Length: 430
Image 1 (cartoon, rainbow, N blue to C red):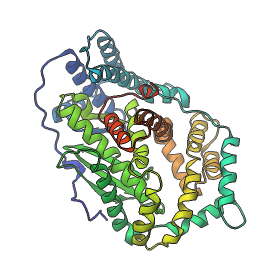
Image 2 (cartoon, rainbow, N blue to C red; image 1 turned 90 degrees about the vertical axis):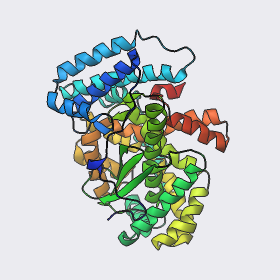
Image 3 (cartoon, one colour; image 1 turned 120 degrees about the vertical axis):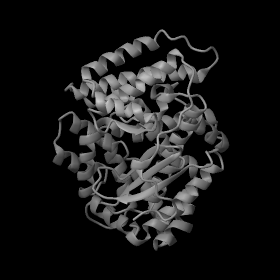
Image 4 (cartoon, rainbow, N blue to C red; image 1 turned 90 degrees about the horizontal axis):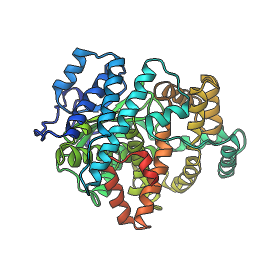
């Protein structure tokens, strides 16, 4: 089943971006070699290259050559050294950020190569090496206090997880209404984004509903301002996921992020490195953090509640009178966001097994047993990647709001500026 609002675009047929020849410069040469190294790592790690729309012959060359990991690591080391001696353009802040970005992306590439060669890193060592950040630790008591708040907000007796599941079942979107609910959420998110952000006239994306995936939603960016967004229907889809996914995967999230990078850095500046997105890299914290914070940017204050109550609840055939109660509980549950980090940290570090990780998620993250089991499989594949959602959002939020000074319009301006820049996670702390 596909979203009726949008035109289908098959991922396999997306054309590579026709790039204009760029003048030879040390940084452009380094950028080209960087792209080819990322493609080379992708031959050893099928999850590594999340998106690529550069020259097709580079991808074909990587497939033919299949460079050994040791050669890739040595080449990346040489590139890092070369970046260190490149002289920047005075007064061009983006050019400085570009050099820092390429250096740190290459360091993350080397870390991923070492992992593929068998190097064992702790959860925190890995997140620092790959994503340029380490998530804070929270004791069980931190989550227990939040659970006490949620307990007081939910009616009935019995286990909290059982009452929470029973409460949420009232807000499952019927399967035959999914498309119309998501279509309307996407349209609203797009309208709100376009009120503040100028996007390419021909940008668009396609929505597909899929099953048997370790994630709930995914954006596959294909270049030429187009994305394929997949929504996993293995688990029940609750009403709040409409806004979450429409914003996170689409507007002003991943789709907008990638479109602005393509427009401002690839097409306007000829920075070929942004035609490729290595998933296990600092870029992911920026991508996930902006996508999650984008929900608040698009729906500040009580605007989300009003839209859900007045528009999405009726479309889903749900009782709008329950919207405020649902939003109140959701706000409390959102405070448990870092619980997933703790479960993943203990699981990746070998302190607990899969069953214990799932049980911990059920107790402290209020995940249903089936959802908790699914999340442990996400940990298997993506490991410390989980920090990018919550820590990424918090870092982006603080960075943008510190510069916006409480102004909603300036918040959008700072948010857009971040989306269209090569800023690193460590740069968000400055």
